[in-house]
Picture 1 (cartoon, rainbow, N blue to C red):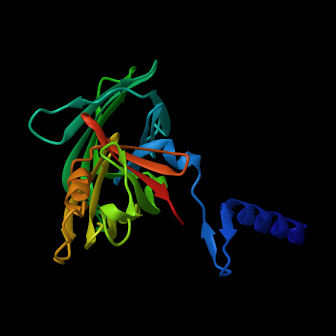
Picture 2 (tube, rainbow, N blue to C red):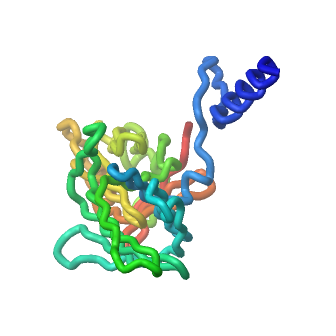
Length: 257
């Protein structure tokens, strides 16, 4: 009997630890991203008591170790934005519970691990049957779209197809690391590096640095860099990355790896 119970326990542990993974050509095992990764754009956690929140375009899910508030799902709502700071407030409710979630762009240190996150989060939550509101604080971050994590070569610039003669050497390209929110690549004349700033419905290329090689006359690198730094939005489809802002479509890239 003990032997049977041991086998059952081992089977449960194996199933519980199983993750979606694939073996690459080098023989290494690596986890793979799925469409599920796009369901939520922001996650936050806090301690004492432990709690967490996942925010998506369709739902907001709150979980905790607080009795009566173990898992609560709210319909997604639009943010109320502060005029003079990067602060967003979400007022959510369902038939049993109401909450106010405030997200501020402010470095936040986890009280247990010491890890630094770029956003401070406050949650005020109560069941409709309660008089007292539970106030919680923690840290969070936006989840950069994993589909950006690739190598992209420029095809169109400011509405026009680009040609090799526009850059004299090779087409501009971006290698985006969505895990670390940074990018590197080639601007058409110089090597470039920088960071990306990602929030829901927002993408910016910031702190762009390039080498200082003199570019031949007619090279469109400066036009490309201006488009890159003017970007506020993006879309991905058919192996293409399109960068834009409210005024225009700025650049179209093709996935190459």
